[in-house]
Image (cartoon, rainbow, N blue to C red; front, side, top):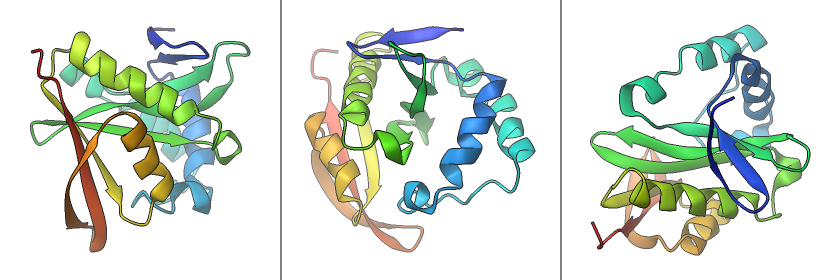
Length: 167
């Protein structure tokens, strides 16, 4: 198990093949994927293959990571950074039973710090469908600032960014 970073309550680690189960479960809850633009996996095998073929760690040296509770090792969801069109995108997704407990904010803040301190990135962005108020609140709590509105997958979306002026 390759732990990337830790917070007070959480640790974030690279995905393992067994995480396919969690990706299958997460994406099969319509409420969890309502604001993501993603579709449910058709099978556990499809989700496991997605994890097995996840190449961001090798290509970029970072990516999205499994978020686990230190106390129990329970998989809560995922959070992390993704290189997309030359920019660094902050993303997260959690099981519904773990919403409104501060886990997304705690993990996202750690990822922003990691991006600035460890990866020496100058700017991190977060794209969210405009109707996804909860995710917008997480970005605001991580000190990302509203930059613009735009259309994403034919739906109104917003872009939030944070800059690291020390690099």
